[in-house]
Amino acid sequence: MMAIFIDILSWVLLITGGAFGVIGGIGLLRFPDFYTRLHASGITDTLCAVLIVFGLMLQSGLSLLTLKMVLILLFLLFTTPTATHALARAAVLDGLEPKLADQPQASPSEEEPPSKP
Amino acid sequence: MNTVLVATTLAIFLTMALALVRALRGPTIYDRIVAVNVFGTKTVLAVALITYVTGHADLIDVALVYALINFIAIVTVLKLVKTRDLAAEGSEDPR
Image (cartoon, rainbow over all chains, first blue to last red; front, side, top):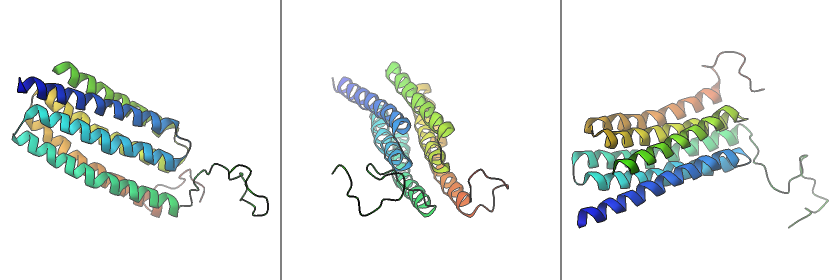
């Protein structure tokens, strides 16, 4: 009885992990500029990885394999945000302007108020 | 049980394909680095999933090592983009 429950739970985790991965991938394509794509890549990196690794850990129970899966999750959760931070910083230092909604293409002139709030 | 694992692996491969499309299309260098970063992380997950599909428990070390190497690769590429001294001449970005 318990095994079936664990199997179903790990199935759910695996499927939602895969779904979030695909959602993040689609977001990576559809977002307008670099900084929003960072958010999309964040979804796939952290949430999808956590769900899939937990789903897999349920599969293997208490074993060396699960310990290594925990280590993988730890490394991923430490290194991916750091890499994303370094990436965003490098982009900002390189002068990559985020695409703001109501900013006209030219530099925003102060005297005319922005049209929509 | 195997079908769910294979289905998740296919979803991960789809994500990797989408990341590759972004890598090819990305206007700036940084879009490409984001795509490579996502691709690397998904490789880790794909290898982990394949470990469970095939049942060879010692394949997990590949995913373990790759999770670290991917991070080092991203930081190295960032340093390369910033200092440009390793890059060959004529990188397409206007200075």
